Structure formats: structure tokens, C-alpha cells
Length: 95
Image 1 (tube, rainbow, N blue to C red):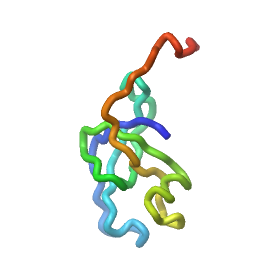
Image 2: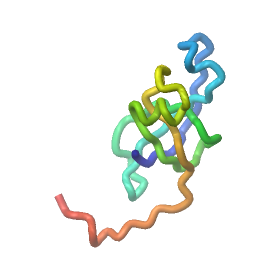
Image 3: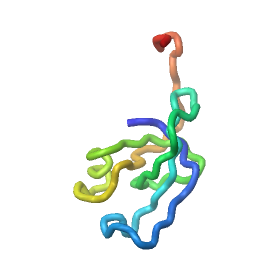
Image 4: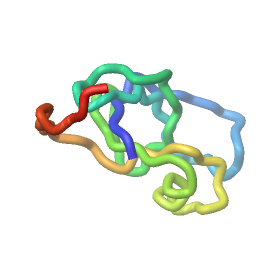
């Protein structure tokens, strides 16, 4: 699982049948200090999240199971909307 911020939506009229009726969102992965850590990804929304929200994302088979279609063409799914993150930075090892 990882944390991200929804930065947009994606509309694809022709798509794999397993995605029909699904909302696709563009998510910017973030570290615990809300800094960008890699390029944005497209994730299927299974909980009703929206642009600007900080979310919890799963990938791979976990995403397909969260979507409820284990054989679908899904690689990332939004499974939670984050209210707050508290981090004790003194416990994070320096690189």
C-alpha cells in the first residue's frame, strides 16, 4: 500500500470490458511528508474518492480483489481516503 493525492480524472470510452462503469483517477504517489516520489499512475476508484483527496492505494492482485473482479485489467485501486498522517520522524532511519 502507498499514499497518494488524486490530481485528476481519466475518461476512456473504448476500454477493456472489465473496466466498464468504473471511475478512473490519476494519483500522484507521495511520501509521508506529502512530497512527490514518482510519476503519477491511473487507479480505479472503489470507494468514491475525488480530486484533491489524499488516498490509500493498493497494487497488483490486491487491487483486482478490492475491485471485486480478480481477473480484471486493474493494477491499482484506491481503497481508502486518508484523514491525517502522523509520523514520528525521530524513528525514521537516515540514509
